[in-house]
Image (cartoon, rainbow, N blue to C red; front, side):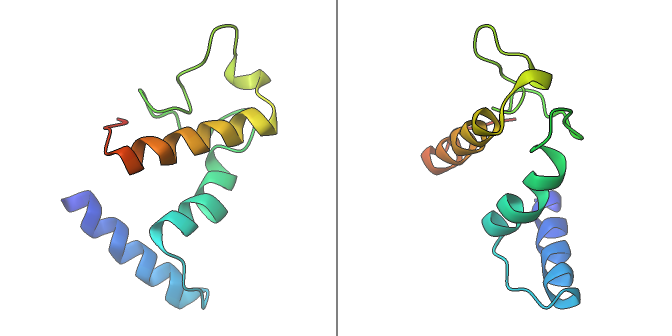
Length: 86
């Protein structure tokens, strides 16, 4: 609950500062994911998230842009299904 409050407060301040109207999902996809996950070396390593759960033979530093995007879609799918990801 505390993390949720902090996240909402941050997003409101970010939207005001940069004159944006991002929802939490839009912010994650367009800003956060691009910075932290859409790179061969993840800036943030969240255990048990689709971003670090590799399929057989996958290595994080060898993922293509398409494979990283698939992991983002996997995360959205788990969230929509109500599955816990972390």
